[in-house]
Length: 240
Image (cartoon, rainbow, N blue to C red; front, side, top):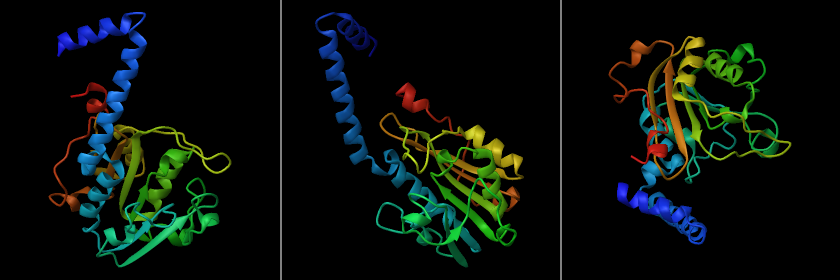
């Protein structure tokens, strides 16, 4: 491996072959990444990975669930997230104005994650679920606090750790890529303890974090998969 690296380094430094070699390596990396996304869908593709995580976790809950800023509640695989909580006593979806919100054909509760949570919605749900929205909210600490305010028991978050900037002019921006420690600390500031956290760290594609936090963590002892704080980005950058 070291010999191959040394040879490639030499080739890349040569005036005539360097550009061609770099282009060939980039093409090879794209081909390998594409093959891995097809062959290892459940571990490399972030949406499929996070959906599999949610199916396992969502089956625990029997109370009311809200998918906050959930647009049309689509799981991007032909289903809806309400089906990931088969035992929920009630399921609601909230949205905000603008693209991928109430102005874009979505229905449900109106919640501004940077605003005030209405009194009748505080603690109204056992679970506040939020999928890949926090990166688009500039006041992320307020948004996390509001998610916690909605929940009497648990918060379930899916957030990007490594992903290209994705925003829409005049609709929503793109501001954050929180680390596992960052999420756990913000949740702790709101009285929640992280009880499960995982990531699909891989050298090939987008990396998501999946986080579950609870007001009473002892209630979930033995009910969740074993875990340790994920070293997000280790495989992506280390190619291990």
